[in-house]
Amino acid sequence: MNHTVQQLLLAAVVVLPLLGSAAALLPAPPGLRGRGPDQAVMRHGVTVTGVVLAAAIALAAGFDHDHPARMQAQTDIGWIPALDIRIHLGVDGVSLPLLVLTALLTFLSALYAYVNRPSGASPKAFVALLLLLESGTLASFAVLDLMLFFLAFEMVLIPMYFLINRWGGAERERAAWRFILYTLLGSVVMLLGLLLVGLKGGTFDMVALATDSGSGLSHTTQLIAALAIIAGLAVKAPMWPLHSWLPDAHTAAPTVGSVLLAGVLLKMGTYGLVRIVLPMTPDAAHTYAPYLAAFAVVGIIYGSLACLALARTGAKGDLKRLIAYSSVGHMGFVLLGIATLTPTGVNGALFANIAHGLITGLLFFLVGALKDRSGTTDLDQLSGTSGAALYGRAPRLGGLLAFGAVASLGLPGLAGFWGEMLAMFGAFDPADGLSRPAYLTYMALAAFGTLLTAAYMLIVVRRVCMGDHPIEPGTGSEAERPALADVHGHEFAAWSPLVALTVLAGLWPAALLGLTDPAVQQLLAGGTR
Image (tube, rainbow, N blue to C red; front, side):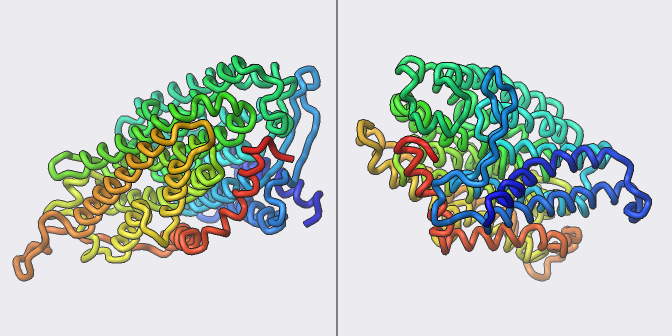
């Protein structure tokens, strides 16, 4: 594809949601109002996110797959000459899958919200915030300047705060405040580290800093800067013990907010580790890697045990909260892969990022639909005598929930398997200079975590899809269960791409690994061109 066309497509992917966010606040033209202004603005959200998705797919189709390590579609314009801050955009094999994933999940969320409009404040504000969130997230994966990365990183916080606070469920104000306080405090610390890298390195250009591979930074500077950057990114990842904002945010958030929070926003933290910490502060990354791996496996075990506690009968566990805690465990595998400092482990981390976005996005869609139908996400109520019993009452919904659960537990042949396996392979043979016995211990603990994941996911499927108290034929208990609608057409449209991509990534992992591996090899070897 022509370089100018690529530049325009990448610029459109980043800028169109921002323009669409502003346009959503304007009155709808008379001919486009449909049944009313509320429907018009929701349709506007679907249209803009659809155009952005089409641009992202076109960008991926025109990407030079023979050279995925090379930064493509670059735009480099001076912005603040005094500080050498530039509007520098580009995409390579690491960022391209995340761009497409973000565009896809946002479009599916807008499509879902078009029919299942969240109850709360103005639809105009909802669509404007959704598009602003998309723009900030896409920019985080596309910018190649440290200061722009920070601005994009911060740009997503305010819209997510309002999505939780204005359209969320019970205790939404508390959850929104915890989200904004944790992430803002982490961002302040991260900014100090980014400034230190940029000022001591002589530039804020991420490509130049990665190519220098920390040669312009002393060992002490790398240690201080990397610690600050890792602390800020770890909050967003989320890494244990900085994860405690996540369960509350997911539980309170509307369905669309949960999908985007789990499917996209968590990836910004781990992407920053791969894009910034590993290539720009390699000495510090080597120093901190064993500690990062230790926190990662604690997160894997802790998240799984928390899910088991929520899944047991009588615990009054919330299904959304359980899936939120499962994200702590799954993102632990991503952090473990990064901490191995090997191409195998980092590729596994990037693969697990995409797989988690697809699978957990699907699970939150399904739980949102279940709540709309039954009025609750309490596991004891969903599995009681008058509970969901999805296999009998809504078999397609039950089948999709079972599919999402087995994909999440890492069933071979589905996307969740490869990332976790590669992360553990990386721990089996970590980078030179890292303690192999320690990493073998981490690998064993991570493997035990997969067993715990299987346990709680199968318990959830049994309880929600079958129930704790099966109906005896001829007892009349069927009358105690109110009607429960099965999957609607618009829900199939929103969920089918996630199912198809989960299967495709599981059966053909080379499609994704072929993009990420050359870029990862180059980043670990010293930068990107």
